[in-house]
Image 1 (cartoon, rainbow, N blue to C red):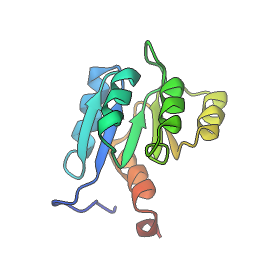
Image 2: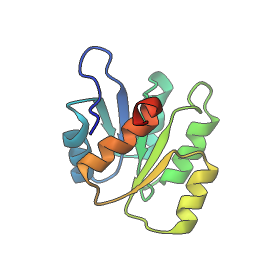
Image 3: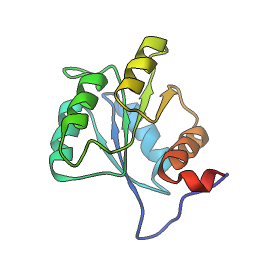
Length: 133
């Protein structure tokens, strides 16, 4: 399996989930290869994005007060942030949610519980598509 480069030019991933245990699992799975920033709500993600531009966003759907779709709509409306790749990482197994995410430009849809290796591989496919061939 391909492993992202270690070093100074590490890519940054913003993980957005209201469950602390999920944020910890994401961090544990990715921190060796990526700089991981975690926030516990869509509102906090949007505040972070006002100042920073990560290379990729992992976004949960079911959050309060702003769910993942509302958050993603606002990200897509932000100047100079609308092109950030987004992977939905959620416990919602529903085709209508997948379709809604695709309409909003998601790159992938991963169900929880996730495999750390699968998560790494899917992120790598989005961030380094030429490496996947």
